[in-house]
Image 1 (cartoon, rainbow, N blue to C red):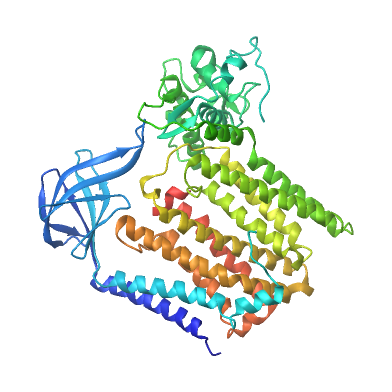
Image 2: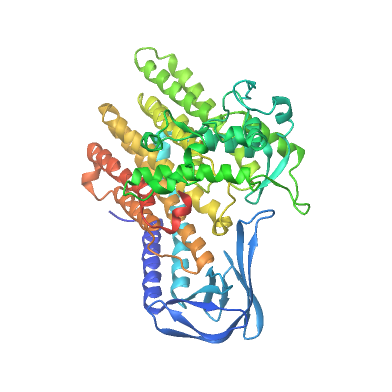
Length: 585
């Protein structure tokens, strides 16, 4: 089969990228240097243990840990250097390039020494980046070319552009010591600091209550009442079984019935912390449950010790009244729960439409549209409240996945009668996972390495590609229940593989650039990036029409089922391995 010009350029770009990697391996050096204040060095320690020489002198004036306002959570690590006597600065996501040597902030020790990574790659980076640029151009050219399979597929399907509680319970003073509702409500709009983020007391109290009890209310108490009551009545609340324990075995070890324990249940008469004696006995599941419970105990102890609620310092900008209103509005509605309920209800309606109730299809489509609009509103509000694009953890990326999946389903559901119910069922499962992750909130600011504009670009591209792959595997599953539509679904999958593979490639490229900007090397064979590359290669196979075996609809759809296992491994499986991407779990 004769390759078109953009296809030739695409394959050439991959060869150039490989050549750049080989050149880095042959001519590049990697190591590190430790600097104390006032030290001057002209050499560094190579990865193999040998000594490398700088063509310049390097010294440290000072090393500073920059914290988020009002807390002790690191925002950045900064080394103030002198290179041949000239001042220079290195920090996270801000490397220093001198005479072909790239210095990046790796770590530090308790004595104030700064540990810098050293990378010397005179040829590999330039060649590799040239390959990245060629890939970006070739992929876009291939998508837009009139003779490309993508354009033919679009014409075939006439595709168009995509992506066009309050709690009112009142606590009974006879059963539990609680702050009166009207007093607690007055705290909702107060602004506090938590781990470097300015937020409303309502947000902190809501997430604290959800973390401790598994719900946003407790025995009729609002989040503000729950949190304030712990502070005002600590003696009574230490005996209150309000701390959720999900593991039944752990409850049995603690000798309590039900799923809740009190703070005093966790300490013996001699103040011995009982969880310490249960941990590390070889039961991995029990240890995980103990770690989760210990985290909750730590939060309660921080609250009682006065370390959880911190007033905003005078030098910190407060939230505007409008932003406070938005935050309170967002907290008052359980968007994630509504979305997965609507999607599952829509799936049930869509399945009913298959049983000769075809008019129900319109109802299912309305529910699908409502779910997408709710997810769009929720995601936009999260972005506005947090101040950064919500892509820093698994729950947020699952929500972004829904933003891509739902409009895809709205556009292509007519390709098969089964696509709408099965697609909504799959999307409902994704929404449910996002909701369950949200029931264990983490209110921490971004790690320093995540405070980079490359984060949003990289994750957006990769997650959009994964959403397209998820849609294609859904079509392949349906093809086995609808033989008459197998070929049509195969052509739909082939059409979507073009942008999916291109976006995954761009995601890998931008991730490499981000890594190079952050710690001076663009590829480290980390499990996450390695499996992303494996996924790219696996999905590239059916793009080659010369493989006649995959031109059979049955063989093609079987292959797509196999290929999606690589996506699952990349996104979920490698989280069990030691990885630089552990912050994404």
